[in-house]
Length: 238
Image (tube, rainbow, N blue to C red; front, side, top):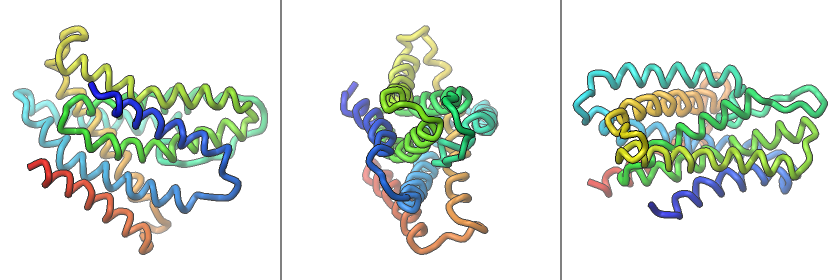
């Protein structure tokens, strides 16, 4: 298991969040471009890689049910995360109030996103997920800052969030090879749930990229680049 995968997953989220201490002006336009790229990339990777692989098992007739479960699960999580995984930053009331719902749902979301990375052919997903976590971590840090948390506390919570995707990766490796509880037979079902989450996240990012569902030239270029990079990786591996 290559250490670089853990490093990319961890440090993208960690540095994406700690950037809140360096940014002195509004960088929302840049974050939206990153979101558009990563959303298109995740959607393309899901269609090109994850869905075909999930349906390659012997229990493929059940996969669609688990994809729907994952889609609905993400809708449920967003009732608590308030769309932070999409890079949304909402104003909260003043005071040292810890957003438990946001933190728990965001960590669970990141844990599940790390699970498809167990298989070697999904290495390209690492960069898409890492890009996706940059604005999510930035939004989380912004919310904690608005609630007057000290820098040390913000860094600790960012570390907790940043470690969740690598942890999901580690657990999924154990599930896929049967070393954790011998649950390798359920791996494709878990993948179905993750696919549902990815479909919800990626389409929501793309639909919310502009008002009235109109995408300007820069965002269209970001979307096309995301799909293009995914296609290059897809054809290079075949």
